[in-house]
Image: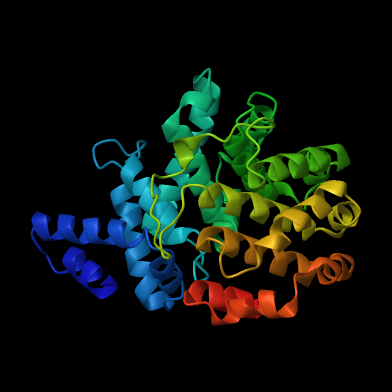
Length: 329
């Protein structure tokens, strides 16, 4: 299917063939299993798809505008991919336009909480930055980088929207966590606030923080391979915790934080075969990340872990995504 998509855009196919190929890719990206398989493709196959989607993202009539339906597809294509290097020209153009859009929205729009495009663009920028050193380097070299950091830092005090806060902190963590400004932004009290926010999200407690649905695509389906509407925000939340914990000066705080142990208390009971695949996937991803970073938290996981027969059954899960994640854990 991926090769057919590339051919449709590279061999001079008619527009109807391109539209059909694009619709097929959008449909396939609703499957967790397909997305996981796609992200594991070698760079010579993955990169052309990324370039095509990036080119389509930017409005051909207004190079400072983005097509939101294709920005959502870019989020699926890039988020979690392991072979995104330094951006190619098409991807670089999409990234610079995303940065411009995010900065412009924060400066010009009074209430970004109500702007669906802003939320989508911020989410996608965070996904592009996370785990991709080449993308971080490119964004750091942009002339708008300082303005991006400044406006996002201001945004943290302007919004109560849980999803916007998570993705804004994720972008900031990618760009400045290892700099002096990062130590200021993520000082102990702010890390504690971040943990409380993440806890409220994964515990599905709307009374603590409201999670905007604007950046969660409507992909509800009861099948094992479907992407639940809450998964992007839950995964982004635990990824933020893991990114922060990668810094020793933050990890030492997290190891003794009540919120961190409450997160473990929430995630560990999900390790059973009757749990929904999206929730089980988030739990395994979080627990594996925490266990690999901290001996102290690894001991806490071992002490609270469900019986081995229950938790290890995940390696035999019918979904390859879960089986692989369980094997890593």
